[in-house]
Length: 121
Image 1 (tube, rainbow, N blue to C red):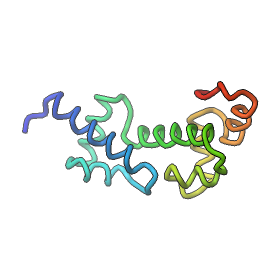
Image 2: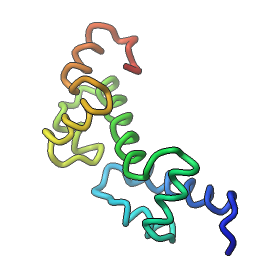
Image 3: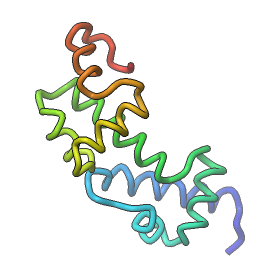
């Protein structure tokens, strides 16, 4: 099968769909590659060329954006949100959240409580 842009973008779309359905579980890049039917290195290459970031960075970003949505729209605790978006260590979740958003989840939540329009900080 030739490596045409359409076939590589199909892999990326399938990988993104897999991430969207499974982000709340403990999934790895190997799991994503296996689900899509390509090697881990090939998945990395097609992701970088089509999305501009690695599969793991995409997964992390997706998890954090889902966490932001939960922080904004639910009364769940930060620990509950961490688990529901696939982080099983609240402190690791807080570190990753801060790295992605620039503030820890507690500050993000406090800012939302002050100004509910902040949705996308």
